[in-house]
Image (cartoon, rainbow, N blue to C red; front, side, top):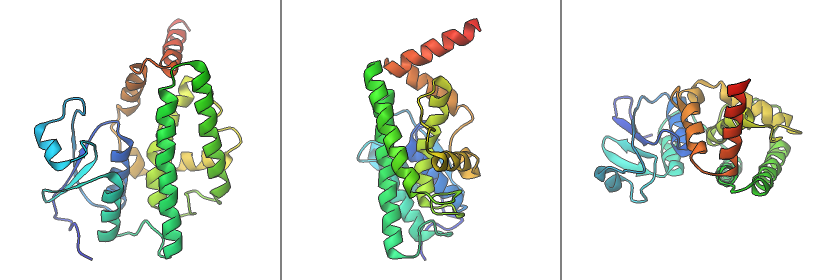
Amino acid sequence: MSGPSRNASLVLVSHALCPYVQRAAIVLAEKGLPFERRDIDLANKPGWFLAVSPLGKTPVLLVDGAPIFESAVICEYLEDTALPRLHPQDAVQRAQHRAWMEFGSALLNAIGAFYNAPDEAALKARATDIQARFTQLEAELGDGPYFAGPAFGMVDAAFAPAFRYFDTFDRISDFGFSTGVPKVQRWREALAVRPSVVEAVSPTYGERLQGFLLARGSALSRRIDAAIAAAAVA
């Protein structure tokens, strides 16, 4: 197995709120690989960044200076080159897990549509869409605590950043995201306390995410404004 040694220089080029960065950070932590995190401002990208990220997106993993871009590629590189394994050994199961990771990426897209919904009707419709996706997940989950049972895997690393959004959403209003999906809720709770997941963001992540959501000018932004106003007079 050739890949990053414990002495290799690993730099994760990041954005503080990017869920795909979190995926890579979680996998690095689960594999016990020390790395430096270098946050950039995506609204004001430094010149060197475009040289290592042709798509202009985070994350990028620099391995002794050699760039690897796209979170899925980074995670597969780490899986190929460092233990412990986070994918099943069986080829069919491994392919199924990769497919569920794609489902997790689709969930992130649905989350973006939710927090950008322009009005209450669209917000409710997009909440219903997310609820339907959670129902699909509920049917797939077993006894847990993780996606495939007692062992943390790559699918867990893919979903943990998506689930983190709901910690903030649930504080804003009851959108019914946990209704009728006890297995999904238990999975969310298990991931929320996993050290690699906790450490994938800064202590100020929640505050920064709320500020980002407020700035969207969306229906959710107005809900946050209302919640802040209500708390101020309580």
